[in-house]
Image 1 (tube, rainbow, N blue to C red):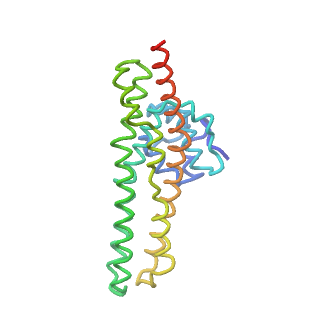
Image 2: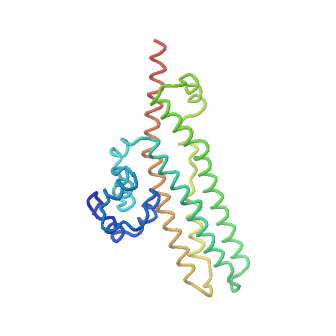
Image 3: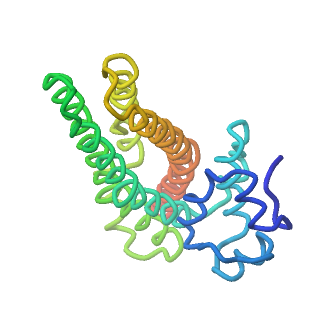
Amino acid sequence: MLIHKDMKMAEVIHLNHHLLHLINRFGIQLGFGEKTVEDVCDDYDVPLLFFLEIVNTFHDPSYFPVSNMLQFKAGMLVDYLQKTHQYYLEFKIPELESYIKRLLSDDSMEPEIKQLLSDFFQQYKTELTTHINKEEQAVYPYVRALEHFIDTNNDKAEFIQRLKDYSIHDYEEDHDDVESKLFDLKNIIIKYIPKPKDSRILNVILHELFELEKDLNNHAHIEDLILVPIVEKMEKELMTRSDNSLI
C-alpha cells in the first residue's frame, strides 16, 4: 500500500513508524491532527509530489520510480540529501556512539573485544563523515552552481572551465563505498561479542545499525540513480550550448 496525498498524516505514521525520522527531515513535526498528507505539505511548504516519492521509496523497497524522480530539480534533491546528512551526523551517529559507549562500560567484557568494537566503530564513523564532507564541500556546491548556470546562462566561460576540471563522472568514480565497514561492524556484534550484563543493549545497537544501513542504501540510490543522471543531463546541455556558441 503506497502513501497518497489524501491519507491522513497520522495514518502514515501508524502504517510505518520508521518513516517518522524521514518526515522530520522535511521540517514536519508531530501535532498535525486530522490533516491529510497534502494539507501538512501545504502547511510546511513542502512539494507534495517530491514528498510522496521520497516517502514511498522508503516505505516500499520495491517502489523506486526513476522516471518520475528524474523530473525533479537537482537543487530540490540536494536540499533533501543535505538534510539526510545532517540527520546522520547530528543524530544517528551520536546516538549509536552513546549506545556503544554504554556497551563498552560493561566490565565483564574482555579488553581486546572492547578495543576491537571501539576501533571498528571509530573507523566507520570516520569513513562515513569523510564521505559526507566530500559531498558537502565538492559535489553539492558543484551541482547547485551548474543548475544556477543552466537556469541563468551566466558566467559561461568560467563554468565551462570548471566543467573541464570536474564533472559528476569524477564523483561516480570517487563515490566511496561505506557499506562493507558497516557490514563488518554488524558482524562483530553478531558473532564475537560475548553476552554482556545487559544483553538488550546489543539488540538495540544491531537494530539501529540495520536501520542506518537501510537508510544509507536508499540515500545512495537517490544519489546514483536520480541525482547523477540529472546532473549528467545538465552537463550535456552546457556543452551543447558551448558548442553552438562556437558555430
